[in-house]
Picture 1: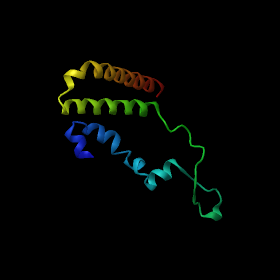
Picture 2: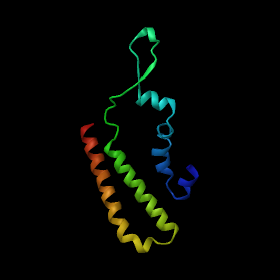
Picture 3: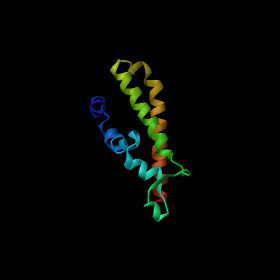
Picture 4: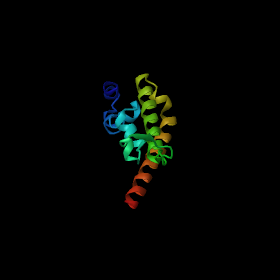
Length: 114
């Protein structure tokens, strides 16, 4: 996956998003322990883990915008690979602008609340 990201110029996206969230993607125990399990409060049960059924909002607005950005990058890479970028530029550019604007607004609102 890293090599494919490198071939299309998305190394930064791989390092910032895919690599750190790989554990969540593959359902590794560390991720399950952190996000989906809680410790049993009975000490006689040796603090085993139980499923957390009331998980608070797992979808962050940035995740949705990030997915849209990945989609735009994928479409742009596909168009570039097939030499179709000039034919579809007027369709992709407005989408990319909307995503970038939404990201900057989200970043500034988060900075204001931090």
